[in-house]
Length: 187
Image (tube, rainbow, N blue to C red; front, side):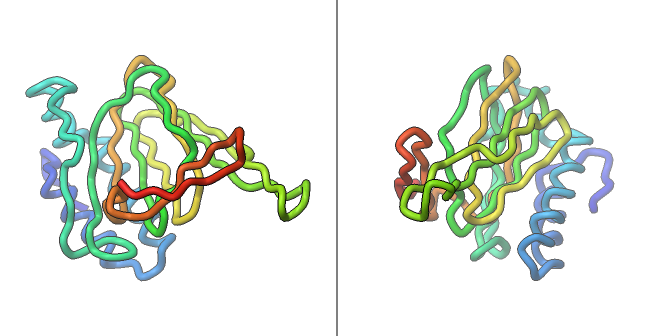
């Protein structure tokens, strides 16, 4: 992993490319990418430089799309932005891709969801399986098909995400936990 004094976006991308190229298995790649993200979260590097130069509004949203590495195809994607207090999304998955979330500042609450078939195979219910708060410096990943949601639990959170492929280009699902339904979407 790069050990330069300032951990640039280019250093981060190089380390992510190494993480994708040195592991053939999905979990090995996700763990390796999480380790690279954890390093960025601990040193700040390019993320802190952007904040120092232009405030939180300088965070780019979409920071980089790779043309060689990713899963299930080339195109891993780096995003960096903020979430405001209480900002949340509904339960969703990332289709055939996976995402590593890293909290740089603030805290987000992640909920992992699953289907409960205790009322029979034709009456599944979407239920929370695990809930945890991601503190600064902590990465967490969600593999293909895993259902989760996020909610900012501090005044503001800075989140860096590494998508195994740009999720806006993939079919995935958004879930309605009250109606126990799933809707496919892309974008």
